[in-house]
Amino acid sequence: MNLRKAIKANLSSNMKLRASIILTGALLLVLAGYYFGWFSNTSNASQAPSGPPPTPVRVAQAVSMTMAPHTLLPGTVVSLRDSVIASETSGKIISIANVGDIIEEGGVIARIDPRDAQQMVDQRRAELQRLKSQLTYHSNYYDRVSASDDTLGVPEIVVAEKLSNREVAKADVASAKVALESAERDLKRTFITAPFAGRVVSQSIQTGEYAQTGAPIARLVDIENLEVSAQVPASLVQPISPGTLLQIRGMGKTLQAPMRALVPVGDSVSRTMELRVELKDSGLLVGSPVRVSLPSAQPKDVVAIPRDALILRTDKQYVFVVDDEGRAHQRSVELGYAQKDMIEVLGDVAPLARVVVRGGERLRDGQAVKWDGQDENAKDTATTQTN
Image (cartoon, rainbow, N blue to C red; front, side):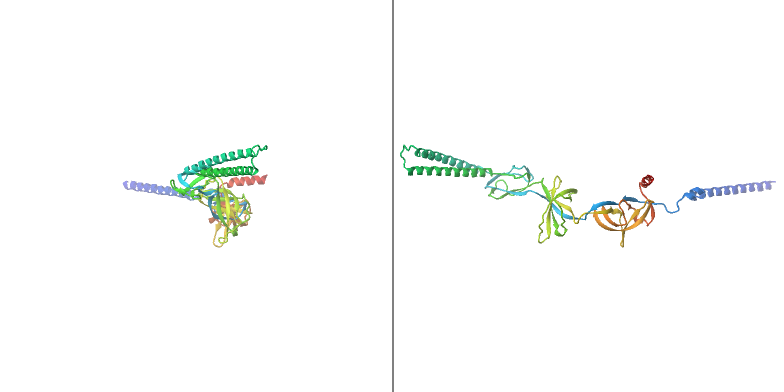
């Protein structure tokens, strides 16, 4: 009896274990089915794409624009007025402007001791006064002896002599006036003034030193009216009219400035001509180096694309053009003019064509692509076609 109960209990336990194993296996099978997609419905399978998904890229449009090849020329910012101011008279320097001082037009740059010049003025003035007195005396004497009634009975020879004395006195007075004016100019020259507004950039003499006539005193530079001076190779000279805007780069700045003149005389050694470009309110400094972008050929209308769209290989160069279906097609191109980040292309690329500028290196001809704004472009195209 006990044996029978034991056998029955053992069978019951084996059945429970077998059922547990079957249930666990079924559960694992269901989980594996969901994991590997065995239970996906047929409608989703039929909607899945047959090929690989479109490759994400970035695109831009080809444009029609006017271009000309440019050559970068080294240049220097120069001042229109850069002068070494010299002394117009001699004497001891009693004051001079400091380096860096800004002097207005007519302002004093340096002063020469004026005492000697002042003494000469006083002397010339006194001499003029003496000669004027003599002229008055001789004029009055002549007037008396040349009276028409001849009451004094003066001989004609005496009258002629008095006339001569009066004329000589007149000449002496005129000469004295000239001498006085010269002395007054020498006195004014003891103030060495600026012929134009500028900045003192150097001193050639110091306070207490003796300046000779014509000796350099200081260098004055106009820092407002500036130009760019550049040497252009004669082979690159193109007919450019004054006022043409040229690009100037220097001191971290890029600006447009009008050409003032191209000096049509070449240097026999360097074979270059001087180019002058006006600068106004540029913020550039005198003497700073710049580069001038000069057209080296006549402008022409071209089809241009961003440089990033180019794919360069050892044996060819090409771009990818995207059609309205979203597929990229390889187009071999030749390169032409370049301007900033745009470059001319010669080949099967039309204006407004959509070209790949990012992600083109890994594309194959005819491959499907997608890009930001693709849906909006498709809507616009569909609306256009409907209308």
